Structure formats: structure tokens, C-alpha cells
Amino acid sequence: MPKSIRPRLALPAYTILLLCVAVAPSLAALGPVSAGDFVQFRGNAGLGHADEKDLPVGWSETENVAWKKPIDGLGWSSPAIQGRHLWLTTALNDGRELRAICLDVKSGDVVHDVEVFRIAQPGPIHAENSHASPTPLIDGDRVFVHFGAHGTACVSTDGKVLWRTQKLKYNHVHGPGGSPVVYENLLILNCDGGDVQFVVALDKATGEIVWKTPRKHISQARRSGADRPGMGFSTPLLIEVDGKTQLVSTGGDHVAAYDPRTGEEIWWSAYNGYSLVPRPVFGQGLVYVCCGFPSPVLYAIRPDGSGEVTKSHVAWSDSRGVPLNPSPLLVGDELYMVSDNGVLKCLDAKNGQTHWQQRLEGNVWASPLHADGKIYVLDKKGVCTVIAPDTTYRELSKNRLDGRTQASIAAADGALFLRTDRAVYRIENARP
Picture (spheres, rainbow, N blue to C red):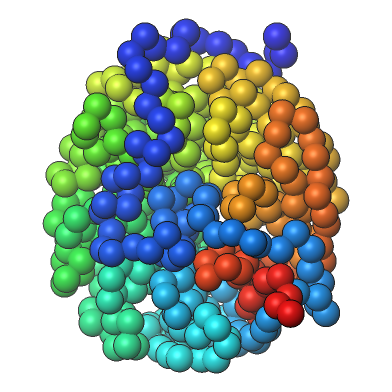
């Protein structure tokens, strides 16, 4: 057995939850969602899957590009898509002007260009980040946009700002990161700063705080800044366990599950990490989480516990080739992850055994996408490697576009939507 895999306990005797069980609460929490939509970060269920068919395997600047729309400013938010509308965010004037932009999915024409916030002093961010990195979330006729500590807002799908709030005060250090999730009447956010760390739920209709739960397991040294800060940039995930919905949220020092209605903590598991970005993944009866800097480890945790489960519910862990930024991807019985330096790896999701690993061409920050029987892995220099999901490595193509690429790919309306630092592309198979 590889040294990088450290089994803790055998998988539980209870019936293993299927991946589709994890999908159900995520969809039910949102308004009406079509299988052809892609309404939040990593798709409708937040797991990196799309239901589209007949998606392209190959493309370039001159092949299979239906349209290319330049976007002013800089933003690393991924496209969120519902029906004919694609929403994303951007920051102009070094973060002083934060905007939400809606494009027509078919043509790429601008439908709405909405100023959401003006910030007098946006402050410094990480050189690789933007002031508009969280992905919008579409819920029926409302679009929720989050800019970290800069502010959070609700925009109607006809382009009107319905509410704004800047009450969530925390030092996001490297700039905004994690995206929002919706559960029933609540908009839920991780707010893990270098100074304070909490999870918060806002009323979707008004933006008022409904509940706010401080992180309970951040060491005092990290809270005071004497040690590495307990900051994080991850997006929480809604899952269903034994008929009850949990909000799984990764922060500095630990991952915790909360009751999404009340913010009450259900279980938590400790690790040595901070500044983490990857979104958790759920399936095979396990939650897969990455712990962030300085030495990333992936943990597979059974989510049926209560209180601290660090020693009782970690089924296995892996410390080789674990990402600091891209989220893992679960497809059937296999878990795929790509490290920031471009090592793509496939593991058995139940026990963590490595099937294969392959070094790609460049460094990677975007999260991989599974759609139409293919996995799309996008590096930072515009190169997308397409592989077949399998226990042996099978590369289908490599495709190049101009510009930097750190936003994750979305899929809807029979096409891929890919954002660079310069433009948004609609990529689809050429029609006769």
C-alpha cells in the first residue's frame, strides 16, 4: 500500500449513500432548475458535473468557437447559467468598481451590465487573485453575487439590484474567494478571514443576517495572528445524510458540518491547514475534503458522526498530489484530483488506492468538470486536457486558447463556457 495513504477505519456497515443522494438536496434547495442549467460554482449540485451531451473534444481560437465576448476588468468567477442567460462578475479600476454582467447564451451579447458596488479602498489581494473571484448563484429570478468582505448583493434577472449588504466584516487577506450556496430561504457563506472566522446565513429576500456561527475550533494562536491565520476561501456543500441535510464547510484547522437552518454544529474533524480553497465533494458515503496550506492532505470522512470525529470517522487520507486550489471530482467509483503543479491523479474513492497519476503540461487552479462522458482539466495558460474517466489514463485531446485561465469551465445548452482573463467563449461542435 502506498505510504501516502493512511487508512483509519473500514467503511461503515450501513448502506453506502449513492452519489445521487448527495445531488438531491442541493437541487431541492434552489428554485426551479433545468438539467441544462449550470446555476452555481461547479454546477447545479456543486459537485463538478453537468448533464450536457454532444460536447466538443477539440477546439482552438479558430475551431468550434461559436462566439468570443471580451469582458472589461478582471474576474475569476466562473459562469453561472440559467436558460438564455449567463452571469459572471468582474472588477474594474483595481477593484474600485464591482459589476455583475449577464450575457446571452446563444449570441454572447451583453444583456445586463450592473454596477453592484463602488469601493473607495479595496485593499491588496494575492497577485493571482481578483476582486471578483466568487461565482454568482442563480436561484429562480434572482442572482446572488458575493465579493468577499467587499459586499454581497442580490440582483434580479432583469438587471435590478434588489439588496446590498456590507455587514459581513472580516479581513479576507488575499481577496475574495468562496462562493455562496442557497438552502430554502437562506443564502449561506463561509467568511474565514485572517482576523475572524464564521459561517453566516442571510435572508435571501432582504440580505439580513439570520444566523452567524463562529468557527469553534480555530486555535487561539491563529485567531490572534501569532501563527498562520485561520483564513480560508472555500465554498460549502449541502449533502444529505440519513434523510437530514448538512452544510459541510471547510475552514482553517478543521472541517465542520452544520444544520443549514440554524447554524448548529453537527460534527467536526481537525487537520493541520489554512488558506484552503477546494470545495468538498460527497459520494460513496464519504465527504472528501482538502486541508489547504502548507502541506495539503485529502481526507475521506464518514459524515454520520457527532461532535469531534477526527479519530473515529476518517476512513482514509492521501498526502501526495493533493490540490491547494482545484476541487476534487468524484465520478462513479473513482476520485480525480489535480494538484496545482499539474499532476492529475485517479484514486479508488472507497479506499484511496491510486489507479494512476499523470503530469499535465502546466499549473492548474480551475476545478475539473465531468460532462458527456469526459473530464475537462484546464490549466492556467489556456490549455485544456480532455480525458476519459477510467482506471487507466486515456487522454482524448489537448486544446489551447489565448490568455490566462483560472476560472472553472461551465457546461450548458450543449456547449462549454470558458472564461479567460480577456474574454468568455462559447465552445461547441460546429453545426453543419
